[in-house]
Amino acid sequence: MLAPGAVSIDDDRRLQNNQIFNIYGLYRLLLSLILLISYIFTSDLSFLGSIDPNLYFRTSIFYIFFNALIIFRGFFPQLKKYENLLFLAVTITDIILLIIISYASGGVSTGMAHLIIVPISAGSILFQNRMATFLAAVGTLAAFYSEFYLNFTLDRSDDLYVQAGLLGLTLFAVSLILQYLGGKILQNELLAKRQAEDLKSLEEMNFQVIQRMRTGIIVVNSGGGILNSNNSAVKFLSEYLSGENFLELPEQLIKQLKLWQSDNNYQSSPFKFNDSSPEVLASFSYLQPEKKSNVLIFLEDYSKLSSGYSFLHA
Image 1 (cartoon, rainbow, N blue to C red):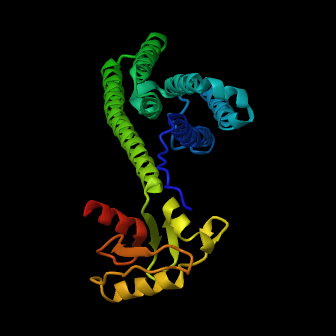
Image 2: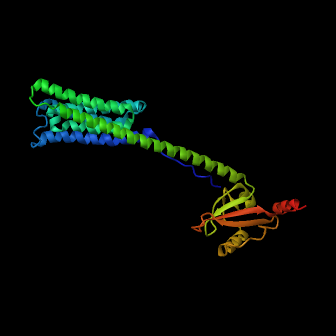
Image 3: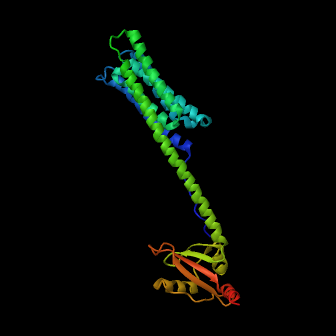
């Protein structure tokens, strides 16, 4: 006998965050490799490391090893207890390292500082709370400090604080937009979860009701193959059981089914499965009338029906 299928919705936030973080980790490793390879082999990008080549090179090397280590964090199962803290630490480290690389290349004027938009975006998706705003603030302060330090050490005449401010505005805008969208998605997930739980409860209730019904119910396909049944149907057809599944419908019932399939207005007369069994009254209905494939068979003990009818008219 088949039990009702349970509704399963994958709303495990931790699993989703791990998947997002894994994708983000691959991006970070690829980015760090590109930054180093471009610096070594591409002479056209002369601004890379133009302010402090040694700092740029060492930071790029460290960034590669750091990203590779994070990707293989699966070898350290104890870190699973601190996943959120790890995500936060990695994101902040990314922001700082990218700002250092930007500083070594000339600051926000080169556009390198805009690379921190991705860590801010990833953090906003991962956390979807005030921590995402905090990351945007960290990125903005780091960009401003980088420009201030460049102006202080190089005594530059051009003022790029406006560009740093626009970058900070972009970071906050990205963070807030992703938080808003993430909140909407989370609300939809919670609503879907509640609906799934309600549907599951309703299915379980219907299953219990159907199993306790005195009417035998069998679901068959168009060829008479049994798909499902309730306890009362098992009692009616107990001699046709093998383990927990019917082998096939009794010949008498197959005959009634074929007569009904040829004429849906056909009404079955009471019949017996064998000499010792009680008289049974069968009725039929399509599970999905528009498809006319699976059929519901209802089996009633005719002796009980007739005795009830006689009692009412006594």
